[in-house]
Image 1 (cartoon, rainbow, N blue to C red):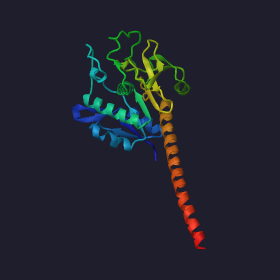
Image 2: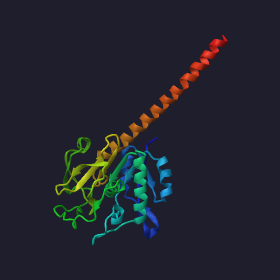
Image 3: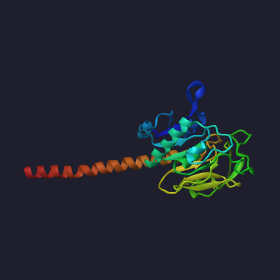
Image 4: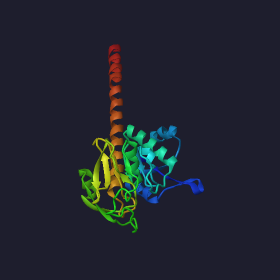
Length: 260
């Protein structure tokens, strides 16, 4: 069975529903995973979601309100989804505690950082980042600005110097202690992060790899890692079960020998 990858979604208040770009679903499906959409529910149900998931994909969407990372609002645009924010921060913290593999995209990288104690710029232009347009006018299927990848694993997977697309006005400001920068744009904006602990799979990208063609190898890497870890856990559990059975078998054999 394919690994089940939970995918966060945006609210669609006009129809009291949810919405998600199909690109995310296609990317996970093509990488060998089973996409599982995660509608917003109460925090008490987050654990029930995670019981059935092998990995978590945090998608793009609206802004995060300043109070979520301990700041006062600045006089800038803030198109937030309060219910989604509360749900996703609880989801991320629970997934992190469970050491569930996480791939975080655009808004997702910001949410991962906030959930673990970091902060974000409320608006890049207001903060003085004007050298690069982080809200490109071109199709998101094309790249618009360069990034330099410093993380060895990501550089091997994606390349050290690449061109990415860009559709955001918020970005990481103070990085959470559990995370380290993995890529930056020429203006200094953090474009990728990874877990400080190399034993964790937690990768955040500020760009949108799901819309770039061909589909980015990051999705295959994400799903393949989940498959490998899941197979390793199952093999270890089987070995432990077999080990527990050995004394009982030996004892039974001894009793039979004594009867003879």
